[in-house]
Length: 277
Image (cartoon, rainbow, N blue to C red; front, side):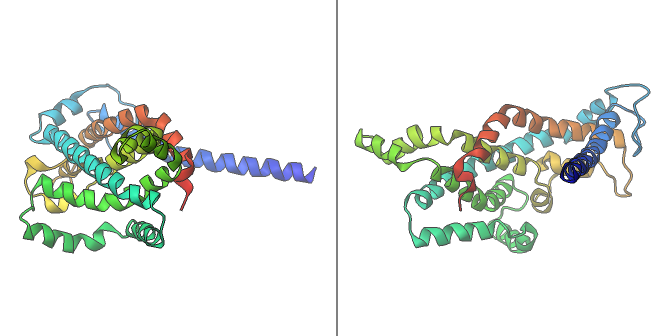
């Protein structure tokens, strides 16, 4: 009886904690939704007396704000493509050619993922200055690709480990080259893992504020993540409804991406290679 009571108390405590966490996430989301359609929005959460799209209209008419979404798409899309290609090429030998050196390289990559970007920003900035890539989307893409590649290599290696090399060897026996075996055998089998890493990289690049804020100078090159900051004027004044409207527009692409990739992401994280060292 005591054991049953303890179990009930434990369940109540667990569900109470989950409810508190849910409320902590729901409150900001509700404010964002209500404020976006409220022309007189404040920091208080309240249902708009009059629902309107005026905040969205004003934001879209502001100079450079709409351009920011295109810049974000260019930066995030290019960064994701570069990381995927480079990481797959680097992860393959680490997964398939077992050696002490490969293990050390893998652990080194894992260590690099723990380095804070802010600690390396000064040297990175000086490097961009040397190669004349300050205020350049290409420079931002290269920096973000370099910072995201180590973790992507580590993830791709673990997903590749979950696919038996015997399947590739069978393709080689049938006359396929290594490149054909990777494209037609390995990648289709690790597709959930590929989508997981790609989605993760895109979301990280889409939401990156620090790198473009420090390296871009021209307003017409700012991504959406920096444009949100520009909605605050020099005195700290802000029209909360417009900020909320822009934030809603900013997160919509991520919701769409997650909606179409969530099934594959669930499969990807459940692949055996995702938990291997």
